Amino acid sequence: TRQAREQGRRREMADDANELLEKLKDLERTNALLEMENHMLSHHVNRVLEPTLEDAEDGKKSAQKGKRSKGGSRAKVPQELTLVQKHEIASAEGDIVKAEVDECKNISEKLVDDLCALLEEADIKIAELSKDQYEFKRDVNASAAGKPLAEKLLHFLEDKLRTKDSVVDKLTLKNAALKQQILKLENQLQHKEEMGEVLHVIDFDQLKIENQQFLEKIEERNSELLKLKLTTGNIVQTLNASKKRLNRLMVESETLKRMIMEKQALTKKVQEEIDGIEVEKVKVKKANGALQKQIEESGMPEVLEYVQQKAMAHQLKKELSNYERKLEIAEMELRRTRTRTIANTLGATGMGGTLRR
Image (tube, rainbow, N blue to C red; front, side, top):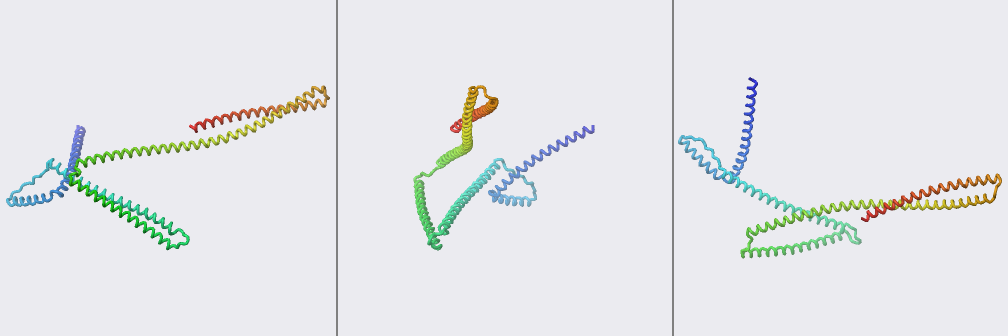
């Protein structure tokens, strides 16, 4: 049907479009590689083969003029380098680029060393200036009894000049010693060259291997030092936490000791009250016994005396009941206080053991 044909055409057009896109991508990749290759070859030509190409172009121009004079015309045949030639050119360009990179690296390292030296010198000069400023303020600006400012300034400058002269003498002696050492090393090197004991490539390789081994050992020592620093930091953190916990426990221990002392004072007071109540109880019992004895010995009292004695006996029984109730309450409070005191004492003892551990 017509719809099936249209769908088939659309599929064919889509397949063709996909094929064209793949071919376009391949061509773009090929063009990118060719551009890189042309860029490399142009650099190579500009560096190495430019004079040769100029001579070749002059020869081609003369040959083309001769062919045109004869009337013949031929199409230019494209020339393509072989893989071996391309590899040689790429290797040469890589070596040149590597040499340039090494040269730039050496220049940069030298520049960095010079800048580091300048910074170190600047730091030293800043430290010296700060020291001179401090000494100037200390020796000149400070009030000295009986000395004018000009005399103090002159004395300060003379001291500084003497210090500078001593430093110059020390540096002169050090420079002379270094010159002697350099001269001695030059003589040793010349003697070794004369004796044929100059280091060979094998010796340099051996020195490089030893240097690499020492660098690896230094890295290992640095790693161990870093681990020790981390361990020390963890130990310090643990120690600080333990100190905080110990301080907290000491505060709690002092609080418990103060509470125990307060409870002991309260217990002593309650015990004194119980002893007083016991004494009063004994007195009341004696009075009650005496009254009972008087009642028994007196026989039948009169009505008014009997009523009075009855009222007194009732009052005494009431007071005896009150005293007995107070005694029970005091005994209960004593037992409760003793229980709390024993519990607090046991807790403080356990905490003290924890602290000692």
